Image (tube, rainbow over all chains, first blue to last red; front, top):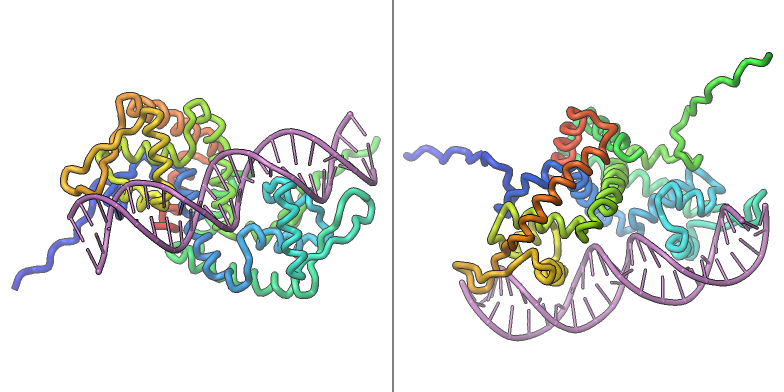
Length: 157
Length: 157
DNA sequence: TATTGTTATACTCTATAACTATA
DNA sequence: TATAGTTATAGAGTATAACAATA
């Protein structure tokens, strides 16, 4: 009986398509984008039941932890341009999750708040996202995951 | 004389906008996306002299290291949908950087190659990108940068 | 019958200019 | 004069269906 073939270990970095991507592999930007997109794929798949995009969720979560925050504050925090924020909040409002109240001290600004159903949604959605994150980064140990978070923050902060 | 006010150290994580983003901060997906976008900002700024987007550069670099690769291979490697790849390669061709030659064995496929000026461009562009990456991740030590690369690959590979 | 490259097309995302009302 | 929110709009990026040529 013949012995099984030995494991083939590629000497040069080669993708599953047979292409050499050795230069791109050295780039933090390239790898961070690929990692983010792979997690976002899982996000969209699991969060489709709530009808929430990544940005929808980020906005709702920030309002939940910062009731009364203004559009301008959220735009700055999430790097969203104000004109693009209008229809975004409008959609969250129309779906009954966010309400806009006059700002207590600045007549130009509008304070954003969650409705009861919005708050309930965020509680469920944050649990789903926490679980999805663990699953989408399953190859990382808890310690590696924390190290990755710290290093990523160091890049863009 | 009054003593100076003590340094105020925030107990909860607070962004520069004054908003608490403590939940989002725990997410690899969120932080990887923010880190990638911050590096891509620097990329677009510096690479505008070449007229290259992130995807343009990725395609050119892959062709450089894999002469004769087909559209299908590049689409799979870079997660691009074939219909969107047509005008992308057409633009690189029109600018004189890529040429399309018949595939030696498969009559349906087309082999992609760099022209002389395309090869020269990739040499310069790869140097610029390597430098830009160092600058955009300047807060990381060489060892941290390598750790970050390894952990990111572990997420999406 | 399956695959490569392609066209057409629609939808989303992102960006800029300009307006209004308040500060 | 500057800022918050908004409108209109253009451009880039991403998605699906369907077709011709070749395997």
